[in-house]
Image 1 (cartoon, rainbow, N blue to C red):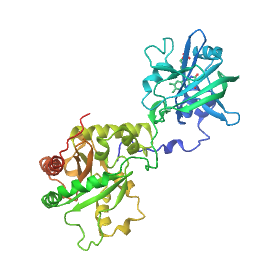
Image 2: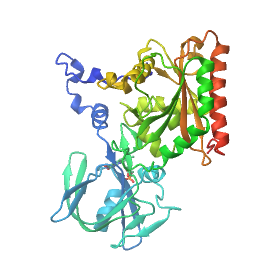
Image 3: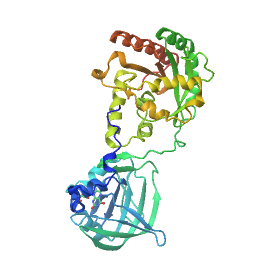
Image 4: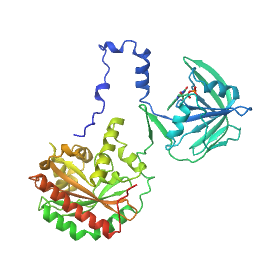
Length: 407
Ligand SMILES: Cc1cc2nc3c(=O)[nH]c(=O)nc-3n(C[C@H](O)[C@H](O)[C@H](O)COP(=O)(O)O)c2cc1C
């Protein structure tokens, strides 16, 4: 099992007999913990007074309020030293931070120093500080301030607003920073992936057949197409001689923990997409560690562990793709143990070896998988299998004039 697959079932029920819930709404740590389950964007609210004095503070509590008149709101802490300066300016600018502006966020969340020192700052139409590289900005006149517990509720009347970079925003969730990943992958620029993959496969077709023969197993190649992993070639004798179907053309979601080789050398957007179905920040961290392990090793391993059904499902699917139409194939594969640390690898349990083929840009163009071989009898035999797969993948990389992206 992946080491962090718990989906929080323990929190799903309400236990009336639990004494810990007595007055827990008044417990700040509990309040923060529960409210931390709600993600927010991150803004820096800035203001400049006529004497040139500037102020800025990070707020996650920004919200759009009204269209007519156009109004927004945020909630400064009563203890904030920046808020009184913003209030005295009588107007403010909301700077929506981009995903790569975590450093700007930390700077404006820290108290006491000159938060603007050394920073590229422009001016909004109303003369408020406009930070470089933000996603969008909203210029406001202070409209109303209400007391709200230990915070104020501040309403601003929007005087002007614009999209600046329009890039992905910085998000805050469960006490950590992150970025947005779409469920729909239609916006990913992956056109051409499949063609490049098919070309790569064609270059090593003979070697793939030989490889399958040498390990007495199956060898398949997969590539990313849109947001899915698609099987683009298959070699080796199928487990069922009467097989009428083919794996080629079968699609699986591009989602952790499977297909780690297609994510390990990818950019942050694609990694974010690969991680997006993970249930928790902890699970995402574990998967990121797996990607590091894959990069260090240069390939990916999955252990059969107690679940051989995932691997035999590939054979079943090949025999009759419709037989698995209703199955949760991804769920089945996710039960394999992927990319274990060195000391967890028992040679006899290695069930799937996946090696990348790189293109000239240093991107993984296809993943070459070998499975369906007899359980390796020793570490040396498992290493030998890995060596054989690597040799074919490296040949593909060489023929493409490719190299691993070392950045
Ligand atoms: C992600 C994030 C969200 C925050 N949201 C708010 C908020 O909504 N209201 C608030 O008063 N402070 C918020 N803070 C804290 C303030 O930014 C920070 O403590 C404050 O600006 C620094 O002190 P100062 O106001 O005295 O300069 C947030 C901080 C972070 C990191």
